[in-house]
Length: 239
Image (tube, rainbow, N blue to C red):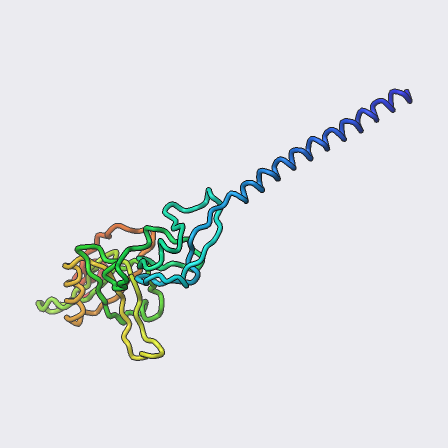
């Protein structure tokens, strides 16, 4: 019995040693693969600071960073010479890879026209609605323009309607320390006809509010204009 016990004990120790050797080999092999993967990198050009849109890139705005080869974004710029002197179409965050699609060869020009498609115009729309003044509207939001206008007929000529829908806010312009009296306005890129509608609403002294849309909603909503008759009929207001 004692001899058999020693046999099984020795066999167990031998199996344990063999298992340890095998596991160590697997660990070493995986470590080798990981090291090889980490070493397989590519140096690409990234922004060394936040770069605003419509800015001509200078050498001091660029730096390099090593990226794993499999994670390099499509269209990444590989050399500073390829990016320097180009104009940015969008804001580049510090440390972000610079992509060819974010740049345009504009011969050193910086104007807003670089980011406007043919057939559209950049407009400024002054507004004092509570959401904008309160800071609830930011660049990138999509908004609807609601207006109450006077039709000039009847006992109660005012009507309220959703006038323009799904406008993307390009920038919010407001008072600054240097210009504390500057009015608040939103900038949009719109077609020529919409630009005229926005100007008419502003010049006609209509009462205007901005409604911020959900980012998940991109289709126009069907609405009816609202006047006193609509309110009486819809809510049963006694007259």
